[in-house]
Length: 190
Image (cartoon, rainbow, N blue to C red; front, side):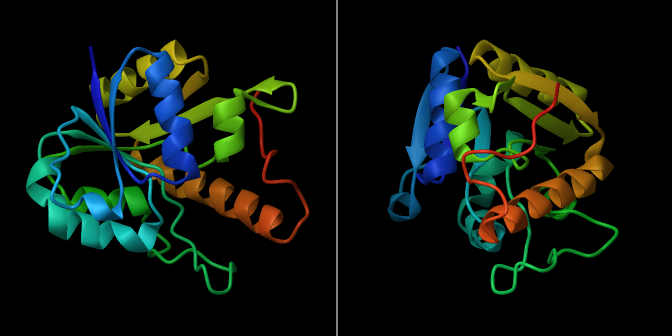
């Protein structure tokens, strides 16, 4: 049985928890008030906004060492919704990987809205989770959980592909914030 710690009790954390529970994983949900509780999962999902990552790493760095870390963030400027906040040749995933060199960091779920994760579809298309990272075993373990939980998973390539995934996530969030698409919709992969 896989133990998963999800840091973030918001909509995304809850939706991902539901998928992983269906897959038979043991789930630990941690919120901002749970800083004294150690994250014990073999897989740790960072289900928080990108600006919160630095504080989580500062607070829980030792707990994250050697684990599979799932970065679901989209590092966008939340004040203007007009740009990403990481260097143009990088990604949130790459930046997290630099800070946690002994962890196996992968990007996933950032191109999905919580409602499409919970519902299992985008319109009539099954929800697909795109996964990027340099550790093939980590991606495979995550993909197995995603598919056992009822969603589709596609290996989107190495960590360098996280930048493109963040661009897709950024566009989707911008469209929803601008009321061009619904927060219950988004991009689907057939």
